[in-house]
Amino acid sequence: MSSPAPKSLILNLMRAAEGRPVTAADAVTSAALFGIRENSVRVTLVRLAAAGLIESAGRGTYKLGPQAADLAHDLSGWRHSEERVIDWSGAWIMVSTGALGRSDRVALRRRDRALALLGFKALDSGLYVRPDNLKGRSAGARERLHRLGLESTAPVFTATDLDAELDAKARGLWQGEALTQGYLHTRQKLQNWLSRWQDLELEVAARECYLLGNEAIRQLIFDPLLPDPLVDRQVRREFTQSVLTFDQTGHEIWRKLLPSMSL
Image (cartoon, rainbow, N blue to C red; front, side, top):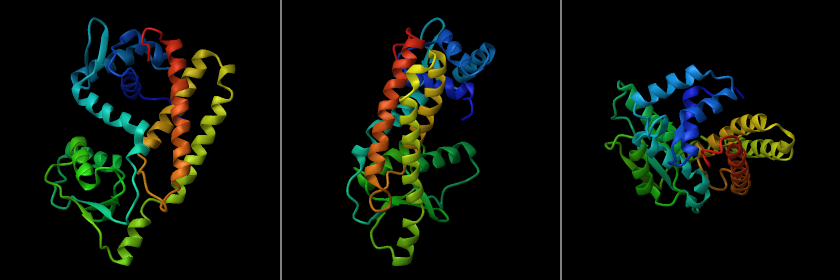
């Protein structure tokens, strides 16, 4: 696992603070754990503020700006992701992007991020698909996709009568066995670390739990939440619970490191 970039570390720190201000001093202390120099932190804070991703919350303190705060709120839903999953009838949610432009790189990045966060995969050129197994179905997917950056003109609809060949192609897009093995692998890493972290120095524990936890949470944030039989839902549930336990421990460790933040 490589050390985080200053931008990622600062934004993650502010997301974890859940609306409470973060001081520049706390950002510097956190970055020092990963060998990031104070000057890099302060330059990054200025750039993030200029981009509107963070904003001043008083002298020497910052919080997420509106744009980043909306995304952070959506991403925090990983804690309750399993509650969104419902039984699957075999229907699919489709998104057509064929009529959308590709010259605006910012719009394209937002579109791709929105589709990835909801677990969509390309079934064909300009046509994306995912199982219709989430609460809210196509209407809920449409609302969240648009909120995350998909253009409002993109059609989002349900398909229930794919032919056998196309249905089989759709079912194979996610490599469900690899996803299941990924849950098992990361869960084991988290459990191994939890069994030994109390023997570590505080700074070492904070650094390691950040890196491990960030990797595991990212895995859940971008998980497509597939239904049975495309993936083993029980293994995913157990993995999610392990990440929740690990995240709680991580917050306790970082509270000791940065008591002023009360994460």
